[in-house]
Length: 438
Image (cartoon, rainbow, N blue to C red; front, side, top):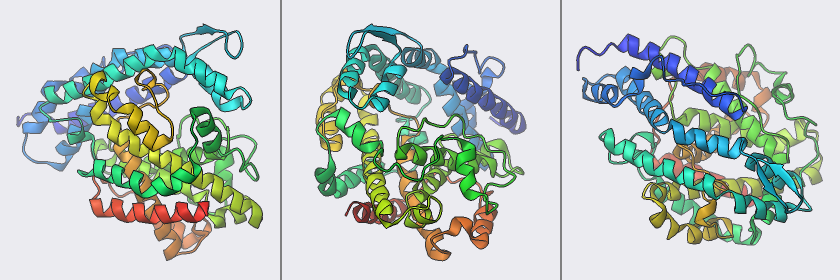
């Protein structure tokens, strides 16, 4: 279709993405939802996707095709996605265990994270009340496969993936970390949460988890200077793991803020964010390095050892859950019968306890960008090790290292990664986790 207006397409995609991102943030904040696709619906239709797919090869159009598909899937599933968010954040439930109360599932989940003595009771209540939410989540994943087929794809992974052998890499990661996981795994979800929040590594962190508190660690360099950072709402500080998550958010925002301004929107930004996840992981993992713990948090040897062990376990659990999501995605797209036949065995092997089908999507939610989250973890660790080897342990304060990061930042984001990079990153990360947990 030669009459497709590339400039108009890029402009309207940019406008739609900004409205869609505002819509998502408003939804998470409990504000009244609006239709982000109404004014520029044409950029999220099957017709536009097929037109972009049949046009002559062009890098801008190839990048635009990814955004068209991303927005089309969100528009088509918008009603069910709204149901999921309202069902989690806004719908109140009345219950009697562990106390008589009236809370949303989100509020109950917060109690799981906060209320150590009664965590098991809160977990039972959450599991009992989350069946409808899980069913809606499963409907979305069945429909995502239908959307892909309607768009002429074999599966969503054809456009959402970033490495063709990712399921094998996920299986390999679970196998290579199984031995050490057997030592630390917990037999119940409540104990799993308690172990992976990182509450035992409580020394040195700021009292409140805010962007300003995180940026204070980098004031001596210009790594974040003069950037319009928008990490969105940061997680509450439940434990040390929350600070790693918050720093990962800031790392992803750093990628957004340093994106090239002289390129079309669809080239400068990718809808699935492999680069965002890579640098998010790099900055998040930085907080667990001995140099950072010593020089920035001012910890002694004993506290450094405790922090590394606690955060190593958190990272091990997170990485195995990320691998689990890679394996669950194709099963979820085939419906409850297929997923239900395997989910308990897979979750028991991966997490240490079985997860029932009626809790899928509530206790373990899949994400459209799970491939990038999983891959970015290994690529981000590799990038962190490269910076340390090239410069030094405190490269985040080294002007030469900061200049390198800032000069490389505007490069266009890659959307795929070779298997060799995943394998090399996984080998490095496994050694790092083993050393931390030793």
